[in-house]
Image 1 (cartoon, rainbow, N blue to C red):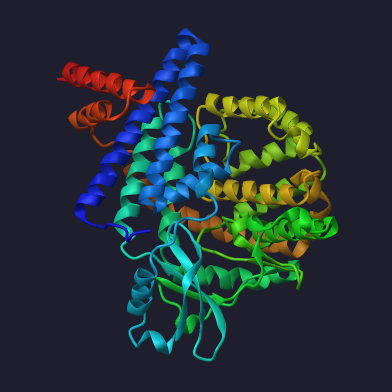
Image 2 (cartoon, rainbow, N blue to C red):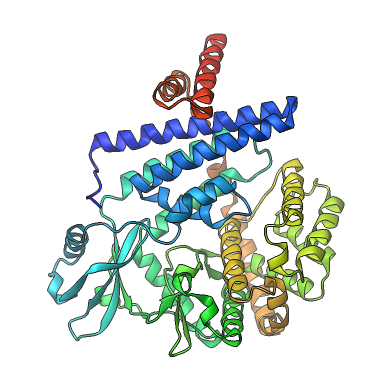
Length: 512
Protein backbone atom coordinates (compact mmCIF):
# COMPACT_ATOMS: atom_id res chain seq x y z
CA UNK A 1 0.00 0.00 0.00
CA UNK A 2 1.54 3.38 -0.97
CA UNK A 3 2.02 6.07 1.61
CA UNK A 4 -1.20 7.99 2.12
CA UNK A 5 -1.26 11.30 0.26
CA UNK A 6 -1.82 14.08 2.80
CA UNK A 7 -1.59 17.02 0.38
CA UNK A 8 -4.24 19.72 0.38
CA UNK A 9 -5.61 18.48 -2.95
CA UNK A 10 -6.03 14.94 -1.57
CA UNK A 11 -7.89 16.26 1.48
CA UNK A 12 -10.16 18.36 -0.73
CA UNK A 13 -10.77 15.34 -2.95
CA UNK A 14 -11.63 13.25 0.09
CA UNK A 15 -14.03 15.90 1.40
CA UNK A 16 -15.62 16.46 -2.01
CA UNK A 17 -16.28 12.81 -2.75
CA UNK A 18 -17.52 12.20 0.78
CA UNK A 19 -19.92 15.13 0.57
CA UNK A 20 -21.26 13.93 -2.79
CA UNK A 21 -21.75 10.45 -1.33
CA UNK A 22 -23.64 11.82 1.67
CA UNK A 23 -25.89 14.12 -0.34
CA UNK A 24 -26.75 11.53 -2.97
CA UNK A 25 -27.49 8.75 -0.49
CA UNK A 26 -29.63 10.92 1.77
CA UNK A 27 -31.55 12.17 -1.27
CA UNK A 28 -32.03 8.57 -2.43
CA UNK A 29 -33.44 7.44 0.91
CA UNK A 30 -35.63 10.53 1.14
CA UNK A 31 -37.05 9.69 -2.27
CA UNK A 32 -37.75 6.15 -1.03
CA UNK A 33 -39.75 7.61 1.85
CA UNK A 34 -41.77 9.70 -0.61
CA UNK A 35 -42.37 6.71 -2.90
CA UNK A 36 -43.69 4.68 0.03
CA UNK A 37 -46.73 6.96 0.15
CA UNK A 38 -47.55 5.95 -3.43
CA UNK A 39 -46.46 2.31 -3.58
CA UNK A 40 -44.66 0.31 -0.92
CA UNK A 41 -43.44 -2.21 -3.51
CA UNK A 42 -41.90 0.51 -5.67
CA UNK A 43 -40.32 2.10 -2.61
CA UNK A 44 -38.76 -1.20 -1.52
CA UNK A 45 -37.32 -1.87 -4.99
CA UNK A 46 -35.89 1.66 -5.19
CA UNK A 47 -34.44 1.35 -1.68
CA UNK A 48 -32.70 -1.93 -2.58
CA UNK A 49 -31.13 -0.33 -5.66
CA UNK A 50 -29.91 2.65 -3.64
CA UNK A 51 -28.55 0.26 -0.98
CA UNK A 52 -26.56 -1.77 -3.51
CA UNK A 53 -25.12 1.24 -5.33
CA UNK A 54 -24.43 3.21 -2.15
CA UNK A 55 -22.84 0.27 -0.32
CA UNK A 56 -20.43 -0.38 -3.16
CA UNK A 57 -19.50 3.28 -3.42
CA UNK A 58 -18.96 3.65 0.33
CA UNK A 59 -16.88 0.44 0.61
CA UNK A 60 -14.58 1.55 -2.23
CA UNK A 61 -14.28 5.03 -0.72
CA UNK A 62 -13.43 3.63 2.74
CA UNK A 63 -10.88 1.14 1.39
CA UNK A 64 -9.10 3.83 -0.61
CA UNK A 65 -9.14 6.62 1.99
CA UNK A 66 -8.84 4.66 5.27
CA UNK A 67 -8.97 6.43 8.64
CA UNK A 68 -12.31 6.75 10.37
CA UNK A 69 -14.05 5.50 7.22
CA UNK A 70 -12.56 2.05 7.83
CA UNK A 71 -13.91 2.08 11.38
CA UNK A 72 -17.38 3.04 10.13
CA UNK A 73 -17.25 0.29 7.51
CA UNK A 74 -16.25 -2.27 10.14
CA UNK A 75 -19.17 -1.19 12.32
CA UNK A 76 -21.61 -1.49 9.40
CA UNK A 77 -20.29 -4.99 8.65
CA UNK A 78 -20.66 -6.10 12.29
CA UNK A 79 -24.32 -5.12 12.68
CA UNK A 80 -26.53 -7.03 10.20
CA UNK A 81 -29.38 -6.54 12.68
CA UNK A 82 -29.37 -2.78 12.03
CA UNK A 83 -27.97 -2.04 8.58
CA UNK A 84 -29.07 -3.25 5.12
CA UNK A 85 -27.53 -6.50 3.92
CA UNK A 86 -25.90 -4.72 0.98
CA UNK A 87 -23.75 -2.62 3.34
CA UNK A 88 -22.90 -5.59 5.55
CA UNK A 89 -21.76 -7.60 2.51
CA UNK A 90 -19.84 -4.76 0.83
CA UNK A 91 -18.02 -3.77 4.03
CA UNK A 92 -17.37 -7.35 5.18
CA UNK A 93 -13.83 -7.56 3.73
CA UNK A 94 -12.88 -4.49 5.81
CA UNK A 95 -14.16 -5.97 9.07
CA UNK A 96 -11.13 -7.92 10.28
CA UNK A 97 -8.08 -5.96 9.23
CA UNK A 98 -7.19 -2.85 7.25
CA UNK A 99 -4.21 -2.63 4.91
CA UNK A 100 -1.00 -1.83 6.87
CA UNK A 101 1.04 1.28 6.09
CA UNK A 102 4.66 0.93 4.82
CA UNK A 103 7.21 0.06 7.51
CA UNK A 104 9.30 3.15 6.65
CA UNK A 105 6.38 5.38 7.67
CA UNK A 106 5.87 3.45 10.92
CA UNK A 107 9.54 3.38 11.87
CA UNK A 108 9.87 7.13 11.25
CA UNK A 109 6.83 7.80 13.47
CA UNK A 110 8.28 5.66 16.28
CA UNK A 111 11.71 7.29 16.01
CA UNK A 112 10.18 10.76 16.21
CA UNK A 113 8.27 9.75 19.36
CA UNK A 114 11.52 8.93 21.20
CA UNK A 115 13.59 12.08 21.51
CA UNK A 116 16.47 10.19 23.16
CA UNK A 117 16.78 7.66 20.35
CA UNK A 118 14.86 4.63 19.09
CA UNK A 119 17.54 2.12 20.11
CA UNK A 120 17.24 3.13 23.78
CA UNK A 121 13.63 1.94 23.75
CA UNK A 122 13.10 -0.58 20.94
CA UNK A 123 16.44 -1.84 19.60
CA UNK A 124 14.58 -4.41 17.52
CA UNK A 125 11.31 -3.65 15.73
CA UNK A 126 9.90 -6.30 13.42
CA UNK A 127 9.14 -5.02 9.93
CA UNK A 128 6.00 -7.05 9.20
CA UNK A 129 2.87 -5.77 10.92
CA UNK A 130 0.96 -8.20 13.16
CA UNK A 131 -2.32 -6.35 12.62
CA UNK A 132 -3.59 -3.13 11.11
CA UNK A 133 -6.61 -1.07 12.04
CA UNK A 134 -8.19 2.23 11.08
CA UNK A 135 -5.98 4.48 13.24
CA UNK A 136 -2.79 2.48 13.69
CA UNK A 137 -1.02 -0.85 13.39
CA UNK A 138 0.80 -3.31 15.65
CA UNK A 139 4.34 -4.70 15.33
CA UNK A 140 6.31 -7.21 17.36
CA UNK A 141 9.37 -5.69 19.09
CA UNK A 142 11.90 -6.30 21.84
CA UNK A 143 12.92 -4.03 24.70
CA UNK A 144 16.62 -3.45 25.51
CA UNK A 145 16.48 -6.23 28.15
CA UNK A 146 15.11 -8.69 25.57
CA UNK A 147 11.44 -8.60 26.68
CA UNK A 148 9.04 -9.40 23.85
CA UNK A 149 6.39 -6.68 23.44
CA UNK A 150 3.63 -5.55 21.10
CA UNK A 151 4.05 -2.00 19.80
CA UNK A 152 1.01 -0.10 18.56
CA UNK A 153 1.83 2.92 16.38
CA UNK A 154 -0.59 5.72 15.54
CA UNK A 155 -0.60 6.68 11.87
CA UNK A 156 1.06 10.09 11.37
CA UNK A 157 -0.99 13.02 10.01
CA UNK A 158 -4.21 11.28 10.94
CA UNK A 159 -5.87 14.39 12.36
CA UNK A 160 -6.97 16.17 9.14
CA UNK A 161 -8.54 13.02 7.67
CA UNK A 162 -10.42 12.22 10.86
CA UNK A 163 -11.66 15.81 11.07
CA UNK A 164 -13.06 15.59 7.54
CA UNK A 165 -14.70 12.23 8.24
CA UNK A 166 -16.29 13.49 11.46
CA UNK A 167 -17.67 16.51 9.61
CA UNK A 168 -19.20 14.18 7.01
CA UNK A 169 -20.74 12.01 9.72
CA UNK A 170 -22.25 15.03 11.46
CA UNK A 171 -23.66 16.27 8.15
CA UNK A 172 -25.13 12.85 7.41
CA UNK A 173 -26.82 12.61 10.79
CA UNK A 174 -28.13 16.17 10.55
CA UNK A 175 -29.67 15.43 7.15
CA UNK A 176 -31.18 12.16 8.41
CA UNK A 177 -33.03 13.86 11.26
CA UNK A 178 -36.26 14.39 9.22
CA UNK A 179 -36.17 10.73 8.10
CA UNK A 180 -35.54 9.32 11.59
CA UNK A 181 -37.60 11.42 14.00
CA UNK A 182 -36.97 10.65 17.64
CA UNK A 183 -33.65 8.90 17.11
CA UNK A 184 -30.70 10.27 19.18
CA UNK A 185 -28.54 11.13 16.16
CA UNK A 186 -26.88 14.14 17.82
CA UNK A 187 -25.79 11.92 20.69
CA UNK A 188 -24.36 9.36 18.29
CA UNK A 189 -22.26 12.10 16.67
CA UNK A 190 -21.05 13.32 20.07
CA UNK A 191 -20.15 9.77 21.15
CA UNK A 192 -18.27 9.14 17.91
CA UNK A 193 -16.34 12.40 18.31
CA UNK A 194 -15.31 11.49 21.87
CA UNK A 195 -14.28 7.99 20.81
CA UNK A 196 -12.14 9.30 17.95
CA UNK A 197 -10.38 11.70 20.32
CA UNK A 198 -9.67 8.93 22.83
CA UNK A 199 -8.44 6.48 20.19
CA UNK A 200 -5.84 8.97 18.97
CA UNK A 201 -4.31 9.21 22.47
CA UNK A 202 -2.42 6.06 23.44
CA UNK A 203 -1.78 7.42 26.92
CA UNK A 204 -5.54 7.27 27.42
CA UNK A 205 -5.61 3.69 26.13
CA UNK A 206 -2.75 2.66 28.41
CA UNK A 207 -4.50 4.17 31.44
CA UNK A 208 -7.73 2.36 30.51
CA UNK A 209 -5.89 -0.97 30.34
CA UNK A 210 -4.33 -0.37 33.76
CA UNK A 211 -7.71 0.56 35.21
CA UNK A 212 -9.40 -2.68 34.11
CA UNK A 213 -6.58 -5.21 34.52
CA UNK A 214 -6.98 -6.03 38.23
CA UNK A 215 -10.77 -6.26 38.10
CA UNK A 216 -10.88 -8.59 35.08
CA UNK A 217 -8.18 -10.99 36.31
CA UNK A 218 -10.41 -12.77 38.89
CA UNK A 219 -12.84 -13.59 36.07
CA UNK A 220 -10.09 -15.21 34.00
CA UNK A 221 -9.52 -12.38 31.49
CA UNK A 222 -5.94 -11.17 31.15
CA UNK A 223 -4.88 -7.63 30.15
CA UNK A 224 -1.30 -7.15 28.89
CA UNK A 225 1.10 -5.09 30.99
CA UNK A 226 1.76 -1.50 29.91
CA UNK A 227 5.44 -0.47 29.69
CA UNK A 228 5.06 3.18 30.61
CA UNK A 229 8.74 4.08 30.21
CA UNK A 230 8.45 3.29 26.51
CA UNK A 231 4.87 4.49 25.90
CA UNK A 232 4.07 7.84 24.31
CA UNK A 233 0.90 9.55 23.05
CA UNK A 234 1.35 7.92 19.62
CA UNK A 235 3.30 4.76 20.58
CA UNK A 236 1.86 2.16 22.96
CA UNK A 237 4.15 -0.60 24.25
CA UNK A 238 2.44 -3.54 25.99
CA UNK A 239 3.26 -7.09 26.93
CA UNK A 240 2.93 -9.60 24.10
CA UNK A 241 -0.29 -11.64 24.29
CA UNK A 242 0.42 -15.12 22.99
CA UNK A 243 -2.22 -17.01 21.08
CA UNK A 244 -4.65 -16.41 18.22
CA UNK A 245 -7.56 -14.01 17.97
CA UNK A 246 -10.99 -15.59 18.24
CA UNK A 247 -11.86 -13.94 14.93
CA UNK A 248 -9.20 -16.00 13.14
CA UNK A 249 -9.74 -19.20 15.15
CA UNK A 250 -11.86 -22.09 13.90
CA UNK A 251 -14.04 -22.29 16.99
CA UNK A 252 -15.26 -25.78 16.13
CA UNK A 253 -11.75 -27.07 16.93
CA UNK A 254 -12.14 -25.93 20.56
CA UNK A 255 -13.90 -28.49 22.80
CA UNK A 256 -17.49 -27.61 23.67
CA UNK A 257 -16.74 -27.47 27.40
CA UNK A 258 -13.89 -25.01 26.82
CA UNK A 259 -16.04 -22.83 24.57
CA UNK A 260 -18.69 -22.68 27.29
CA UNK A 261 -16.01 -21.69 29.81
CA UNK A 262 -14.73 -18.91 27.55
CA UNK A 263 -18.24 -17.53 26.99
CA UNK A 264 -18.83 -17.53 30.76
CA UNK A 265 -15.59 -15.64 31.34
CA UNK A 266 -16.61 -12.98 28.82
CA UNK A 267 -20.05 -12.57 30.37
CA UNK A 268 -18.62 -12.33 33.89
CA UNK A 269 -15.99 -9.84 32.77
CA UNK A 270 -18.55 -7.67 31.00
CA UNK A 271 -20.94 -7.73 33.97
CA UNK A 272 -18.07 -6.78 36.26
CA UNK A 273 -17.17 -3.79 34.08
CA UNK A 274 -20.80 -2.70 33.80
CA UNK A 275 -22.03 -3.25 37.37
CA UNK A 276 -18.94 -2.93 39.57
CA UNK A 277 -16.20 -1.07 37.73
CA UNK A 278 -18.44 1.49 36.04
CA UNK A 279 -15.98 1.56 33.14
CA UNK A 280 -16.07 -0.82 30.19
CA UNK A 281 -14.28 -1.91 27.05
CA UNK A 282 -16.58 -0.81 24.20
CA UNK A 283 -15.02 -2.84 21.38
CA UNK A 284 -14.84 -6.49 22.56
CA UNK A 285 -15.04 -8.15 19.14
CA UNK A 286 -13.28 -11.37 18.19
CA UNK A 287 -10.24 -9.53 16.85
CA UNK A 288 -9.58 -8.01 20.28
CA UNK A 289 -9.83 -11.34 22.12
CA UNK A 290 -6.73 -13.54 21.95
CA UNK A 291 -6.98 -17.18 23.02
CA UNK A 292 -3.93 -19.19 24.03
CA UNK A 293 -5.11 -22.79 23.70
CA UNK A 294 -2.00 -24.28 25.33
CA UNK A 295 -2.31 -22.14 28.47
CA UNK A 296 -6.15 -22.00 28.27
CA UNK A 297 -5.82 -18.25 28.67
CA UNK A 298 -7.96 -15.42 27.26
CA UNK A 299 -6.49 -11.97 26.61
CA UNK A 300 -8.41 -8.74 26.04
CA UNK A 301 -6.56 -6.06 24.05
CA UNK A 302 -7.14 -2.66 22.39
CA UNK A 303 -8.58 -0.33 25.05
CA UNK A 304 -8.87 2.73 22.83
CA UNK A 305 -12.67 2.58 22.82
CA UNK A 306 -13.96 2.71 26.40
CA UNK A 307 -16.74 4.48 28.27
CA UNK A 308 -17.57 5.36 31.86
CA UNK A 309 -20.87 4.89 33.69
CA UNK A 310 -21.95 7.28 36.43
CA UNK A 311 -22.69 5.71 39.84
CA UNK A 312 -26.41 6.57 39.54
CA UNK A 313 -26.62 4.82 36.18
CA UNK A 314 -24.61 1.85 37.40
CA UNK A 315 -27.05 1.42 40.30
CA UNK A 316 -29.92 1.51 37.81
CA UNK A 317 -28.29 -1.21 35.73
CA UNK A 318 -27.99 -3.33 38.85
CA UNK A 319 -31.73 -2.94 39.39
CA UNK A 320 -32.25 -3.92 35.76
CA UNK A 321 -30.15 -7.07 36.23
CA UNK A 322 -32.10 -7.89 39.39
CA UNK A 323 -35.36 -7.61 37.42
CA UNK A 324 -33.83 -9.64 34.60
CA UNK A 325 -32.87 -12.41 37.01
CA UNK A 326 -36.51 -12.78 38.10
CA UNK A 327 -37.98 -12.16 34.61
CA UNK A 328 -39.70 -9.00 35.93
CA UNK A 329 -40.44 -7.20 32.66
CA UNK A 330 -42.27 -4.33 34.37
CA UNK A 331 -39.24 -3.76 36.57
CA UNK A 332 -36.96 -3.66 33.52
CA UNK A 333 -39.13 -1.01 31.87
CA UNK A 334 -39.20 1.07 35.07
CA UNK A 335 -35.41 1.07 35.14
CA UNK A 336 -35.25 2.16 31.49
CA UNK A 337 -37.55 5.06 32.27
CA UNK A 338 -35.51 5.97 35.36
CA UNK A 339 -32.35 5.97 33.24
CA UNK A 340 -33.99 8.50 30.94
CA UNK A 341 -34.11 6.16 27.96
CA UNK A 342 -37.81 6.91 27.35
CA UNK A 343 -39.37 10.33 27.79
CA UNK A 344 -42.09 10.60 30.45
CA UNK A 345 -44.83 11.33 27.89
CA UNK A 346 -44.14 8.15 25.91
CA UNK A 347 -46.67 5.30 25.86
CA UNK A 348 -45.16 3.22 28.65
CA UNK A 349 -47.90 0.57 28.44
CA UNK A 350 -47.07 -0.02 24.78
CA UNK A 351 -43.38 -0.21 25.58
CA UNK A 352 -44.03 -2.64 28.42
CA UNK A 353 -46.07 -4.91 26.12
CA UNK A 354 -43.39 -4.79 23.43
CA UNK A 355 -40.54 -5.53 25.87
CA UNK A 356 -42.53 -8.45 27.29
CA UNK A 357 -43.03 -9.88 23.80
CA UNK A 358 -39.37 -9.40 22.90
CA UNK A 359 -38.26 -10.96 26.18
CA UNK A 360 -40.50 -14.01 25.72
CA UNK A 361 -39.24 -14.51 22.17
CA UNK A 362 -35.51 -13.99 22.77
CA UNK A 363 -34.93 -15.07 26.37
CA UNK A 364 -34.49 -18.78 25.83
CA UNK A 365 -34.76 -19.15 22.05
CA UNK A 366 -32.19 -21.16 20.16
CA UNK A 367 -30.15 -18.49 18.31
CA UNK A 368 -29.56 -20.89 15.42
CA UNK A 369 -33.29 -20.99 14.69
CA UNK A 370 -34.11 -17.36 15.41
CA UNK A 371 -31.15 -15.57 13.85
CA UNK A 372 -31.99 -14.37 10.37
CA UNK A 373 -35.51 -15.76 10.55
CA UNK A 374 -38.64 -13.90 9.50
CA UNK A 375 -39.70 -13.76 13.17
CA UNK A 376 -36.50 -11.97 14.20
CA UNK A 377 -36.96 -9.44 11.40
CA UNK A 378 -40.58 -8.89 12.43
CA UNK A 379 -39.70 -8.26 16.07
CA UNK A 380 -36.83 -5.94 15.18
CA UNK A 381 -39.12 -4.01 12.85
CA UNK A 382 -41.75 -3.63 15.58
CA UNK A 383 -39.20 -2.32 18.06
CA UNK A 384 -37.73 0.14 15.54
CA UNK A 385 -41.19 1.36 14.57
CA UNK A 386 -42.09 1.95 18.21
CA UNK A 387 -38.94 4.01 18.80
CA UNK A 388 -39.63 6.11 15.70
CA UNK A 389 -43.13 6.87 16.95
CA UNK A 390 -41.90 8.26 20.26
CA UNK A 391 -41.85 12.01 20.70
CA UNK A 392 -38.16 11.66 21.48
CA UNK A 393 -35.54 9.38 22.97
CA UNK A 394 -33.09 10.52 25.63
CA UNK A 395 -30.13 8.26 26.28
CA UNK A 396 -27.28 8.39 28.80
CA UNK A 397 -24.00 9.53 27.30
CA UNK A 398 -22.50 6.05 27.26
CA UNK A 399 -25.48 4.30 25.62
CA UNK A 400 -24.11 4.15 22.09
CA UNK A 401 -20.90 2.52 23.33
CA UNK A 402 -22.83 0.18 25.64
CA UNK A 403 -25.15 -0.96 22.86
CA UNK A 404 -22.13 -1.68 20.66
CA UNK A 405 -20.30 -3.58 23.41
CA UNK A 406 -23.38 -5.65 24.31
CA UNK A 407 -23.97 -6.55 20.68
CA UNK A 408 -20.35 -7.60 20.19
CA UNK A 409 -20.30 -9.69 23.38
CA UNK A 410 -23.52 -11.36 22.27
CA UNK A 411 -22.04 -12.15 18.87
CA UNK A 412 -18.88 -13.70 20.36
CA UNK A 413 -20.79 -15.72 22.98
CA UNK A 414 -23.26 -17.10 20.45
CA UNK A 415 -20.36 -18.01 18.16
CA UNK A 416 -18.82 -19.94 21.05
CA UNK A 417 -22.07 -21.55 22.23
CA UNK A 418 -24.43 -21.43 19.23
CA UNK A 419 -27.28 -23.33 20.88
CA UNK A 420 -27.83 -20.85 23.74
CA UNK A 421 -28.85 -17.19 23.71
CA UNK A 422 -26.81 -14.59 25.56
CA UNK A 423 -29.51 -14.21 28.21
CA UNK A 424 -29.70 -17.97 28.71
CA UNK A 425 -25.94 -18.07 29.24
CA UNK A 426 -25.89 -15.02 31.52
CA UNK A 427 -28.82 -15.77 33.84
CA UNK A 428 -27.00 -18.36 36.05
CA UNK A 429 -24.12 -15.91 36.55
CA UNK A 430 -26.08 -12.86 37.72
CA UNK A 431 -26.13 -13.54 41.47
CA UNK A 432 -22.36 -13.27 41.86
CA UNK A 433 -22.47 -9.66 40.55
CA UNK A 434 -25.16 -8.38 42.97
CA UNK A 435 -23.35 -8.16 46.32
CA UNK A 436 -24.58 -5.76 49.04
CA UNK A 437 -21.15 -4.10 49.27
CA UNK A 438 -21.32 -2.94 45.66
CA UNK A 439 -24.90 -1.72 46.13
CA UNK A 440 -23.84 0.36 49.15
CA UNK A 441 -20.94 1.84 47.22
CA UNK A 442 -23.27 2.68 44.33
CA UNK A 443 -25.69 4.50 46.67
CA UNK A 444 -22.89 6.74 47.97
CA UNK A 445 -21.64 7.31 44.44
CA UNK A 446 -25.19 8.19 43.36
CA UNK A 447 -25.33 11.00 45.91
CA UNK A 448 -21.96 12.37 44.78
CA UNK A 449 -22.93 12.16 41.11
CA UNK A 450 -26.24 13.98 41.71
CA UNK A 451 -24.37 16.88 43.33
CA UNK A 452 -21.87 17.06 40.44
CA UNK A 453 -24.68 17.01 37.85
CA UNK A 454 -26.47 19.84 39.68
CA UNK A 455 -23.36 22.04 39.68
CA UNK A 456 -22.63 21.22 36.00
CA UNK A 457 -26.14 21.93 34.67
CA UNK A 458 -25.56 25.50 33.33
CA UNK A 459 -22.49 24.45 31.32
CA UNK A 460 -24.23 21.34 29.96
CA UNK A 461 -27.24 23.37 28.88
CA UNK A 462 -25.09 25.93 27.05
CA UNK A 463 -23.16 23.14 25.30
CA UNK A 464 -26.42 21.52 24.20
CA UNK A 465 -27.73 24.83 22.85
CA UNK A 466 -24.59 25.31 20.75
CA UNK A 467 -25.08 21.91 19.08
CA UNK A 468 -28.52 22.91 17.80
CA UNK A 469 -27.19 25.53 15.39
CA UNK A 470 -27.67 24.39 11.82
CA UNK A 471 -25.18 25.29 9.10
CA UNK A 472 -26.37 26.82 5.78
CA UNK A 473 -25.97 24.80 2.58
CA UNK A 474 -27.51 26.54 -0.45
CA UNK A 475 -25.78 26.65 -3.80
CA UNK A 476 -22.89 24.38 -2.74
CA UNK A 477 -25.25 21.43 -2.23
CA UNK A 478 -26.92 21.96 -5.60
CA UNK A 479 -23.54 22.25 -7.36
CA UNK A 480 -22.11 19.09 -5.79
CA UNK A 481 -25.25 17.12 -6.56
CA UNK A 482 -25.11 18.25 -10.18
CA UNK A 483 -21.44 17.28 -10.44
CA UNK A 484 -22.23 13.85 -8.98
CA UNK A 485 -25.09 13.37 -11.46
CA UNK A 486 -22.78 14.15 -14.38
CA UNK A 487 -19.85 12.02 -13.23
CA UNK A 488 -21.64 8.92 -11.94
CA UNK A 489 -22.68 6.08 -14.29
CA UNK A 490 -26.33 5.89 -15.24
CA UNK A 491 -28.43 4.30 -12.50
CA UNK A 492 -30.44 5.06 -9.37
CA UNK A 493 -27.62 7.01 -7.71
CA UNK A 494 -27.12 9.34 -10.70
CA UNK A 495 -30.89 9.80 -11.10
CA UNK A 496 -31.23 10.65 -7.41
CA UNK A 497 -28.43 13.20 -7.66
CA UNK A 498 -30.02 14.92 -10.67
CA UNK A 499 -33.46 15.07 -9.00
CA UNK A 500 -32.01 16.36 -5.73
CA UNK A 501 -29.96 19.02 -7.57
CA UNK A 502 -33.05 20.28 -9.34
CA UNK A 503 -35.00 20.40 -6.07
CA UNK A 504 -32.16 22.26 -4.33
CA UNK A 505 -32.07 24.87 -7.12
CA UNK A 506 -35.86 25.26 -7.04
CA UNK A 507 -35.87 25.64 -3.26
CA UNK A 508 -33.12 28.23 -3.41
CA UNK A 509 -34.99 30.22 -6.08
CA UNK A 510 -38.22 30.04 -4.07
CA UNK A 511 -36.51 31.29 -0.92
CA UNK A 512 -34.80 34.03 -2.89
